[in-house]
Image (tube, rainbow, N blue to C red):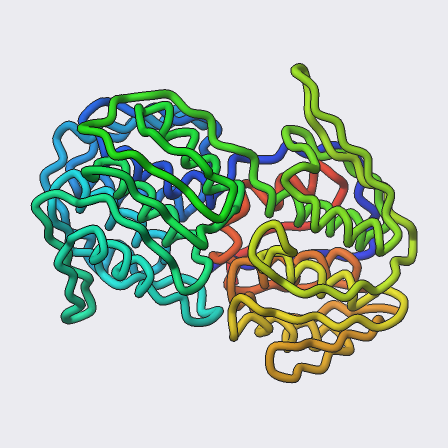
Length: 421
């Protein structure tokens, strides 16, 4: 098992290109199941989660061709509507095959998924929505079994805002008879990106990006070509790394429009941020002060502050001036990185879903363990500013969500290497 070794105290400088978004690519890969015609996707990141999803699709009979960041999917030979536990145990996004399979094949058996241990992410909203559209759904022996002649359009109201639930039901509704309304829908840019791909495939969707999405079902969808949006969480992570190290860094291939809540908090911390989006180029440039001000945050569904950036901001607050209150409202178990940051000398107190962070003059390198994907990123940021060497173990979490992390950091001047643990 690999680990990262980071020697802290070096400022970052230069440019980094942001990869395609993992959280947009995963549902869009599943969209190939809705049509027998080829779907071509570009700007697909090379990540472990992407590889896992492609393996799952292949075992269902999908032909996959991959060339650099382009993936071609052909589901004309789809012959298996089962997603087994062995294939999905490491990735919760695997539940996203459920809606497309039921819509096209009339049945599906999908193992309840695994992934990061950051809290309960139940699939009951997915099940409730499919049942409202006429499917018979049972959960037995760790599998969700769904069956239907043909899905019917329905008015769906989710009890909680769920990104994967919105995506699953939106894909299913594309081939349903009649009109489906998804109310209390997730508004994340990744949902909008999926809608754009589905529309390119012939779907009739309006309202993506708002809390009410309208889908008029069609008889079938066709092939298309779609470019995956940039990864706003990867971009936010590099912005936080630059902020923590007092650096000036330019992120290419993304604009601040995807990151309003994050940019606002970084500016509150004392960073100067410039963003530009033209037909020729889009970029964000951050210039950070040597000492930041602590900023309080409260995570919330988009367009609020993203839960996937909470850990990275905790790392910033660990070395900022003053104290901050950080409230996590999305997942109930997403402060596991706090204990690891404390090993580096951070002053953090946890009370339920609230963390109280007081900045310290310096962090000191130590051996820490990554507990989930974004927790891993927070430890990397802390390691970049800590004195001496920080050894981050169990970095397979990082490989699930950050493409070429150490290479990109090294290009910015960081001293980081990968070793066998």
